[in-house]
Length: 207
Image 1 (cartoon, rainbow, N blue to C red):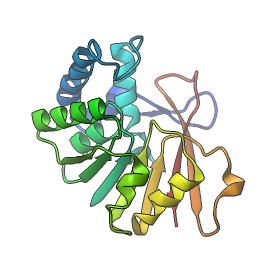
Image 2: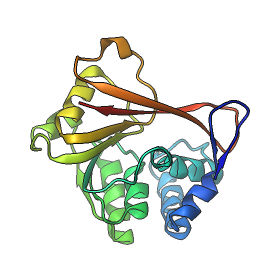
Image 3: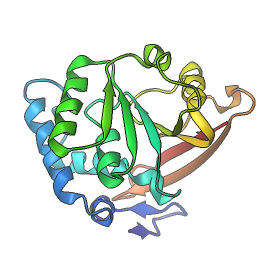
């Protein structure tokens, strides 16, 4: 699954990642639902190909090529069409996931997919700042965010939900590391996916 790449960063293979978790078929069904629904409502860009969707799905699992598989409770901020919530639920069926999606049509789509695939995902149809008030502090082992730009206020809110030793996974690199509040630690990983055209990054925050 991991190649050498053209420098020191590993090259991950999308189809091998999905095969590793034996979720090729349910992922295919999920992506078909996105394609069908996308004709009526713009879940993803109309220019997104099937191969692009497969790559997005596999990328949801990239963090766990570098750390142990998640367990317990995980919140996902702004999953959009269901990334990474749906993919993580398929790969880790014992994981209890809360998807926080403010767009009503996207939240309805995730709810539909969740029922169809019998997944343990609760959908909160609110902005994260509003949803935050309804959660107990330090009540999640993991948090994740793939499709939303990270701000310092958002990061502080996300970290307040984590139990001791918990990790907030951001599918990119923070732009202003120097401005992070004291007591916040971050670990970064870099990798390629399927080719070496675009170096990708992951950030794991803890407090």
